[in-house]
Length: 296
Image (cartoon, rainbow, N blue to C red):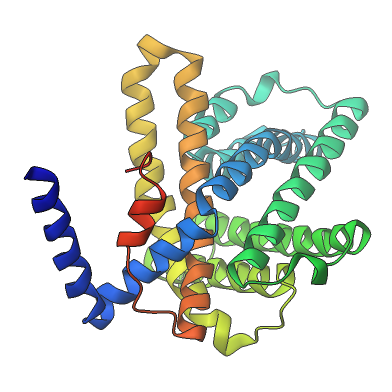
């Protein structure tokens, strides 16, 4: 009796959401995200992003230390305002700047690791975006062309990071009187939108255009900003409360959670574009439940 009752309720909810635009669109986006193996791709992006973030931060701090070795006060201000804003790991690097030694071999190894892990992130993002847009595997580019496009995407990511760094620094130091927190937030959202939009266009085989990628880029840009603003603080507090028990494991898990949330935001934002462009709603979630009984 109970299974039939639950099944009847699920079918009624499913029929209700299919008749209403907003719930139907949300459900269709989530169902397509699951059907396109979004969870698996998000896990891969989180893993390689976790590997790449350490050499990226170490390279940044090492370069700042090398350039500003005669002005430790300015160096500490830059590291505090930029690296210190990252959840979990930023505070630890900020508190141990003096212990970081600049060596040519260390920089070379860090750069090699960053390129390797960064290209892995880009390649998995390419595969995820192509699958979300239904690009057949035989029509996708080979390893060499994918790597070239991946390097271009890394350049876009680097430019976005530099832009966000400049905005954060100016807002923190107050060098420009017109750059308030509200203005800084709007610029940060704009940079997120540009970053996501460029990634969607560069990493997808299908030529999409601005009108197609803009809705997801806007939604994802705002979501990324909210995640950076709220999620980072939340993770830091959770890790701070758990650090006495779990120690270094809490730091690792906290950073992985933060990266995983960012990866899911980016993938869901691209799914928004795909569902909107093809008007792929309404969709039922009953068949999805039947195909994935273990997950439910």
